[in-house]
Image 1 (tube, rainbow, N blue to C red):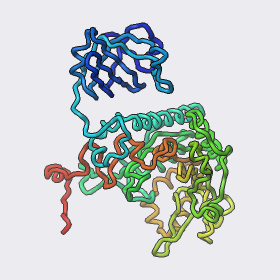
Image 2 (image 1 turned 30 degrees about the horizontal axis):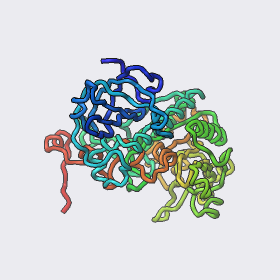
Image 3 (image 1 turned 120 degrees about the vertical axis):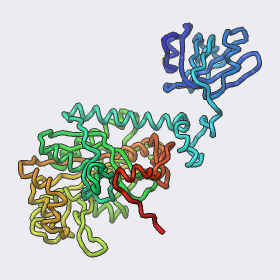
Image 4 (image 1 turned 90 degrees about the horizontal axis):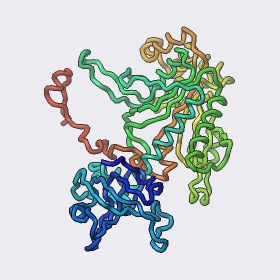
Length: 464
């Protein structure tokens, strides 16, 4: 077989014979001639099988969504037939040979149209077909490009990419954990990470200084349009930094990334708005600064929200953290935290990045001294024993000298939803879950076999 040529490169081979490989998007049999639209991951091109072509017989057997290898001559179209504004609208492939690499049944829905109108159950059952649609291809590649550019920026700024464990300890992160039974330790469980929060801080203690990873996070919380059980974030932590240091560098990363991708930012530097002012002016800490014209033009309106309350009251009257128990209060409120006074007035170094009404990222400067972290848990009413049980390993680590540090995490799905103009998380995830928590294509959750339950030492008590 000849060397493969990608469809986007066909214009470089006008007058030459090439071989493309991909799918049949459209087939039009006009009797003496057969027309096709072929596609691969780079684009689409029209092919024509002429009456005397050696491919005319095989062309009769080819149907839409067949996987084919096509050999032919790249011809420039006559000027009157040029399709302006269309990729490869000025060329076509004169087909000389078609090899069927894989036949295909008729898809259960039209892949060439906007599949967002197809029922969720059908789309997720046949997600691999849905991914062939033009919009889903665009969204997946947009996501890949966003991550690539962020990664390159971080490497250029002395960050190391380091993975942290997926099997870990249940920790106080604010949501319910997904747990995994331990076969070797019956009755004991691992937890899947809600975030790499503690591990990335331990990396700072370990002298890494600048860390990031493309981290998978899992939280057993109520599902909604922009939130799923699992999500991915660009997770970042830095040593020897102030709040302004982190915000400035991360703003530069986002600016560089989205402008390289061709997007327009409404205001630079990003506005910085205090939480209190945001609530008074917009009624929420996630707001949209765009005009109607901005929205029509796909403008991105970023803003930082700062000076959040550190604590809030629970339904039973106790104090809990608003964002992250590992945060540092702003410097002028540190004394109040250490004394356990005026808890409702203490502000934290938390900073959230909002864009077009969505939270795009959030982080804080961390408490890096054991006595400060312990004071936070004391403020929430925990005893010394409870604190030791929950974060004793962190307190121990900090005793060996932790540098001042802080970080941030950017939710990839929410950022791509903004860039793609989508309203639902499932439109920017390859294999999302349904609204009921069912996996795409595969059938989970589902029961374990009796043998698996016995091996794990688990008994299921069915609800009445």
